[in-house]
Length: 92
Image (cartoon, rainbow, N blue to C red; front, side, top):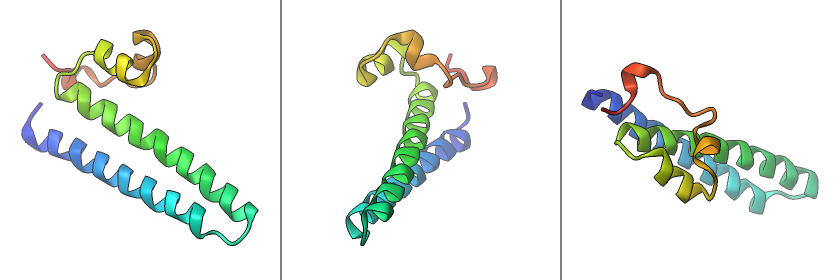
Protein backbone atom coordinates (compact mmCIF):
# COMPACT_ATOMS: atom_id res chain seq x y z
CA UNK A 1 0.00 0.00 0.00
CA UNK A 2 1.40 3.39 -0.88
CA UNK A 3 1.67 6.13 1.72
CA UNK A 4 -1.15 8.27 0.29
CA UNK A 5 -3.59 5.37 0.54
CA UNK A 6 -2.59 4.79 4.18
CA UNK A 7 -2.89 8.52 4.87
CA UNK A 8 -6.42 8.34 3.43
CA UNK A 9 -7.22 5.55 5.91
CA UNK A 10 -5.82 7.62 8.78
CA UNK A 11 -7.91 10.60 7.68
CA UNK A 12 -11.02 8.41 7.41
CA UNK A 13 -10.46 7.14 10.95
CA UNK A 14 -9.96 10.66 12.31
CA UNK A 15 -13.11 11.87 10.57
CA UNK A 16 -15.18 8.93 11.82
CA UNK A 17 -14.01 9.54 15.39
CA UNK A 18 -14.77 13.26 15.15
CA UNK A 19 -18.30 12.47 13.95
CA UNK A 20 -18.70 9.96 16.79
CA UNK A 21 -17.66 12.54 19.40
CA UNK A 22 -19.98 15.16 17.90
CA UNK A 23 -22.99 12.84 18.00
CA UNK A 24 -22.14 11.71 21.53
CA UNK A 25 -22.11 15.35 22.67
CA UNK A 26 -25.54 15.80 21.09
CA UNK A 27 -26.94 13.24 23.54
CA UNK A 28 -26.04 15.33 26.57
CA UNK A 29 -27.15 18.56 24.88
CA UNK A 30 -30.56 17.25 23.83
CA UNK A 31 -33.66 18.77 25.44
CA UNK A 32 -35.96 15.76 25.43
CA UNK A 33 -35.77 12.00 25.41
CA UNK A 34 -36.73 11.71 21.74
CA UNK A 35 -33.81 13.94 20.78
CA UNK A 36 -31.52 11.97 23.12
CA UNK A 37 -32.57 8.67 21.56
CA UNK A 38 -32.13 10.08 18.05
CA UNK A 39 -28.65 11.32 18.94
CA UNK A 40 -27.88 7.94 20.51
CA UNK A 41 -28.87 6.17 17.29
CA UNK A 42 -26.59 8.46 15.28
CA UNK A 43 -23.82 7.80 17.81
CA UNK A 44 -24.25 4.05 17.35
CA UNK A 45 -24.02 4.41 13.56
CA UNK A 46 -20.96 6.64 13.91
CA UNK A 47 -19.36 4.06 16.21
CA UNK A 48 -19.87 1.38 13.55
CA UNK A 49 -18.22 3.61 10.96
CA UNK A 50 -15.34 4.38 13.32
CA UNK A 51 -14.87 0.66 14.04
CA UNK A 52 -14.74 -0.08 10.30
CA UNK A 53 -12.25 2.72 9.70
CA UNK A 54 -9.99 1.53 12.53
CA UNK A 55 -10.12 -2.08 11.32
CA UNK A 56 -9.27 -1.07 7.76
CA UNK A 57 -6.35 1.02 9.01
CA UNK A 58 -5.13 -1.77 11.28
CA UNK A 59 -5.22 -4.31 8.45
CA UNK A 60 -3.42 -1.91 6.11
CA UNK A 61 -0.75 -1.49 8.80
CA UNK A 62 -0.32 -5.27 8.92
CA UNK A 63 -2.24 -6.19 12.06
CA UNK A 64 -3.55 -9.75 12.00
CA UNK A 65 -7.21 -10.67 12.14
CA UNK A 66 -6.42 -12.59 15.32
CA UNK A 67 -5.16 -9.42 17.06
CA UNK A 68 -8.16 -7.45 15.82
CA UNK A 69 -10.55 -10.18 17.00
CA UNK A 70 -8.88 -10.22 20.43
CA UNK A 71 -9.30 -6.43 20.71
CA UNK A 72 -12.96 -6.72 19.71
CA UNK A 73 -13.55 -9.65 22.05
CA UNK A 74 -14.83 -11.86 19.25
CA UNK A 75 -13.77 -14.69 16.99
CA UNK A 76 -11.45 -14.13 14.06
CA UNK A 77 -14.22 -15.12 11.66
CA UNK A 78 -16.65 -12.61 13.19
CA UNK A 79 -14.03 -9.86 13.08
CA UNK A 80 -13.33 -10.51 9.40
CA UNK A 81 -16.98 -10.51 8.42
CA UNK A 82 -17.70 -7.42 6.38
CA UNK A 83 -14.23 -5.93 6.74
CA UNK A 84 -12.25 -7.57 3.94
CA UNK A 85 -10.03 -5.20 1.97
CA UNK A 86 -9.73 -5.50 -1.81
CA UNK A 87 -6.83 -7.79 -2.76
CA UNK A 88 -4.63 -4.90 -3.92
CA UNK A 89 -4.89 -3.40 -0.41
CA UNK A 90 -4.13 -6.57 1.56
CA UNK A 91 -0.91 -6.30 3.58
CA UNK A 92 1.95 -8.45 2.35
